[in-house]
Image (cartoon, rainbow, N blue to C red; front, top):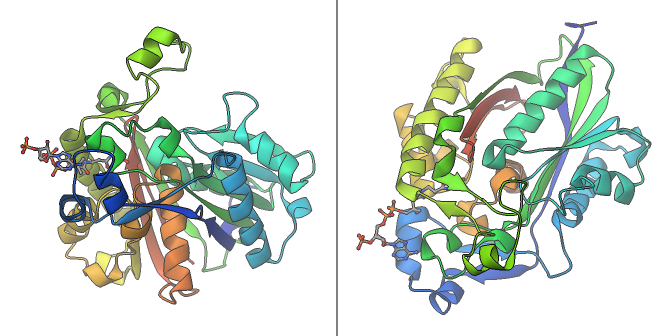
Length: 331
Ligand code: UT7
């Protein structure tokens, strides 16, 4: 059946928790200041999940919005791919929690761990399932409650991250449909894994009072190295997407990079002489929301009237792992 089907994005939604943490709030918590954060990252505020909200709760709200936008119900779904590194717990998966909350049939549901590249990875996996013909509608969710893994005494990380969820319904369509996922390219460089880690709580370093004393439960990052690798890998993933489709950067309507840092996004755009007005930016409002960042930025682009059906859109992401990837699609 391969080759008879392609994937189109039939509905999208996102959810930002109500509580907002501004740069001025952070000034009262750690040695930092609003101007430094804006100048070095572009971030102004980020959203923080309520105490009773976990990744599947945020994902649930985003998924409901995506289903409504697609004109579908949860019973229409054939699979859930839940992209996260801050799932509700290790077991059961957040995908299964969401499958129960939505009231889906007994469908495939699994978590996907690729950190900030998670959503691009999830889209690629969904696209491949759809192309094989056995799946009509797959829900891809990127959802993170990352603030629970951030040390608010570490100014190099705590200013960066926020919570959010985004959800897309990836649906089967005819091979000659033009509004489809055109290609995806995924990469990893595990040898650089120590640049960005959430070390404790797994089978190597189980949680213990000693580990908690040393703040092992929080993310640790070598920011400058991550920055350089982010620009390098996202640029090369964009080249791959353009070359594979014989498309030039000037033909792309919107670039939606992982929303980690405005300077990183601008550096990638500059590499292609891509106009800054055609880069979808949400980082000022959300901070870095890891796997949720691309669908959240997309939704802001859609709801502010920028993104339209038929637009050529280039997604690119990088993250812990290190992981990276790109998706070229016509929305
Ligand atoms: O999804 C992947 C996740 N990670 C990322 O995307 C992070 C990528 N890296 C970055 O975005 C940037 O490297 C940061 C925003 C983390 C840091 O920006 P930078 O321009 O690379 O700053 P830096 O680390 O070179 O630090 C410059 C100065 C240092 O002071 P000195 O040594 O010059 O006196 C830092 O101690 O800024 C200081 N600094 C801060 N000052 C105020 C570092 N963090 C802060 C802070 N507030 N929060």
